[in-house]
Length: 397
Image (cartoon, rainbow, N blue to C red; front, top):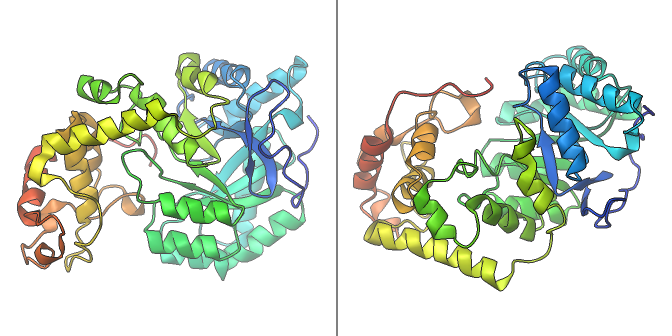
């Protein structure tokens, strides 16, 4: 397979369509990408599983493949799948855009060795995009802006081992804004969801700077929308919840949405919506309004508008995030998802919230700030009673 184009090249196609007719969107300074990205973290049971998923993704019009060393054997299996396609004559290097990741930290030499190991597993001389995986803390951001990471990335770009550099982040909004405004990165991967729109302004900020923006797991992390409860299905009718969530993000101009497939069937929506990049239709807007109204009616006087006026909390309790989980459980029947996420709090390091509702000391400082006059300490206590349970193991980490 031919080498990846060196960094600094123009975006190939922008909003133009691919040879098969699927939509492509600009992605930073690199090649344009499909509206959906194949995330390879779930197709790791065998090389045959990865081959089937990659084949189905390419058939669905997906050209952007995302992997990481942290995803077990994903890079190795992906490399084998791509070589198999190339040997069959059914894949050219320019047909795909490949992103892998690097954990921030360590020396420049260690980082270089990690990237070279990724390329060896993938069987490629270079990759289109390298994302710093989990730029979640100020120390990690300083590592790349002012420490060994800066030297490392400059070297990788200069030598053409990577085409462009970006980051994924589960950190707070101030940290993400600082990363976006640093000028260091060409793309970012953020948690952007129909049920959690807190970071949409950051995504728009990145897009306005001609950066690529990838939404992290709108299906699973967005609310287990691939397996929605009956109440949520009714609230989103006549659209499937996942269909509505995908269309909402695409209508916001998000460059590409990740899809972690375990089998070809998981790519059905990507195939159906591969060119659905226009604004929301009247029917789609009505369905989203209907969804919001249904949740508000069920919560009644306990509905939180997510305005964040309650912050900052003296105890650092993430009040809006916790009440959002309560809303998903009570407002739309999404108890399984809300319970899973609530019980990851404090157990996933900088990848998720650190304090749950038990940290509330009932100081009352949030009460006069709330425009809805919510009894916030009582709601937090109720959230913990409803959602506290034994934690489940995360897929990775």
